Length: 522
Image (cartoon, rainbow, N blue to C red; front, side, top):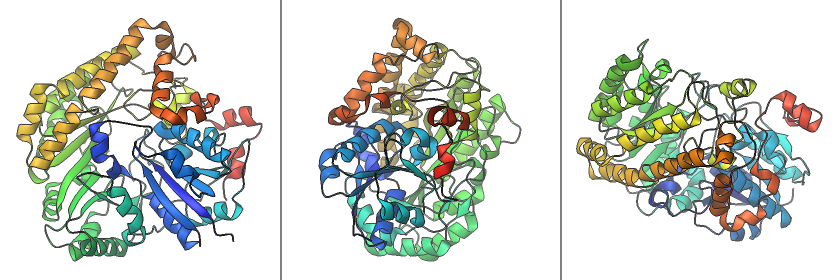
């Protein structure tokens, strides 16, 4: 096989940005799979480099520099940015490959702009792409493994790619690790809800931690598991076998159901400094929150007591909510969240709009069948900048009225001061203050207010977000143009919009046959 020059591009940013939070922390959000692809390419005899785009790098220089094939990993909010990069690369004679959440969520749309679109990806899939390395126009080839890989290269194998990425972070540097794939929970809006839970090897965890202790003076590790600690005792045994107390700081996303006091004691003993549990709703998702049949204010009290218990063991806690779910109605869910913040002032609230992502989760196709999905450009589908779902019990204006009111309450000077007083440690206080004052807090309120004004004053904008028109409002188009910067000129004009129907029937209508099935690897 020809020795190829492979570039793997991890799109952590979706365009240029001057956000303080982004400059401080975004390099730490680099994905693991682009690093894994880099390792596999080298093991297959090729020259690989992994570039993490954080918002300031010169993409045209990266892509045009000695590249035969370009792998791009992107979430849906970076899809239009990725399409522009792919178009630019193709003009240079480079074959392009898309992987990551967007490729799984909107594979048929992605085939218009990439030569290959990958679903579940293992080393065999990568080898097939590199062996063939052929332009596929006008529709790219879709390839997928049957399931997630059973093993991933560890920290030692990925280290040169990890090191160059975390070096971009000016202060806090977090090494990405993973202990499991998939999720045992069945939240209908989640991309992992239909992926079988699969623990990775515990010996690999031990080896990764030994390597870090020998390489980094005081490592910080961020676990990328959808729900860390599902095999709690075995995972913690692996950590305790290797890591002396106080030598590594850990952060993880977990569920309240796993955070019993017994587990919290062990977390604290083993250096866990940050936990991100999902509350999601005051009326559902009780399996994850370990709240039994409690709903409403009863659930608020129960969950608040639990979160305060967590804060007594772990200094940094972010709690996550989904806004606009079908079970929500009126002001009550938002007022209940305020009551929760009063009872648990030390927790940082993370708010996400109900958002559908193509065909990635069971709820997505259900909402399409109900004709409730809006053609909001991919660029805004990061769970925060817009919702692409017509809510069952809210107009778009009333939803934004409630959301703005909740954010104003959550990040008011009084609420921020209460949070800082309840927090322990300079790092926790510093992170929460920066988040509250940057694009995560005050900036997001400013953005939501701007969107709400356009809803009230711009008939085109209102008709688009109420599902009455497909005409793209200038509000969206202008932001995409600004964010993409120099890459805007390479964005295909048709890539500004997409078909919200991702069902097999839609694929047959568009392409004559269900090409997704034809191209999937058996």
